[in-house]
Amino acid sequence: AQSVSQHNHHVILSEAASLELGCNYSYGGTVNLFWYVQYPGQHLQLLLKYFSGDPLVKGIKGFEAEFIKSKFSFNLRKPSVQWSDTAEYFCAVNKGSTLGRLYFGRGTQLTVWP
Amino acid sequence: NAGVMQNPRHLVRRRGQEARLRCSPMKGHSHVYWYRQLPEEGLKFMVYLQKENIIDESGMPKERFSAEFPKEGPSILRIQQVVRGDSAAYFCASSPDSVEDEQYFGPGTRLTVT
Image (cartoon, rainbow over all chains, first blue to last red):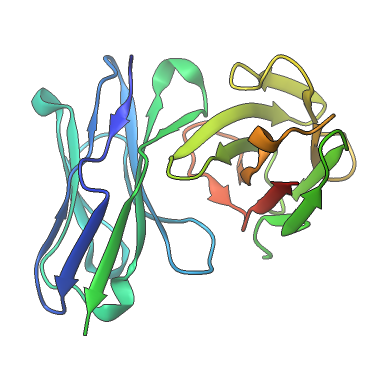
């Protein structure tokens, strides 16, 4: 079945460590790609998005993601995490053929120890 | 500009009762989406509405679930004769006119069926 896969369900890092969260999707054709974050007790917020153009996308709070079309991947990265980055991270895909519908991965819980 | 509002934040219903979940989109947004998050799973699309129209309800269970977005007032997700399996977090999102725009999420309604 077509899907969005986030391979790591729980990642634990120390402050200043580098972060990479994987996201792969299995849809062909035109896609729009998103990373959302949900901080404890808060609602989902957009970190960054890719629609077209430069495949390296920069988002808020020092996050970036790279779209690699040949690998169907959109991995999220941050060079140096902070304790405040502790949150759940969701990758989402919008297929051009299905209007606004977003397909979500099951999420990665990131815990950063101070 | 207030964000997407959802109420109630928590709802407890006994089996067989009805649940009504409300979503007020951001000002100026005419597209509303409902998603459901079951425990240990990512968000799953349920329905996409514009004012007075259901655009895509392919993610809605065929029975007991309905949604509306009237000309005036909030969008309503209605679940009749709730069962324990309906226990989940229900998220509403809204976006401006274009389907390619970012979706802004509400805080969610956590439904518990006892």
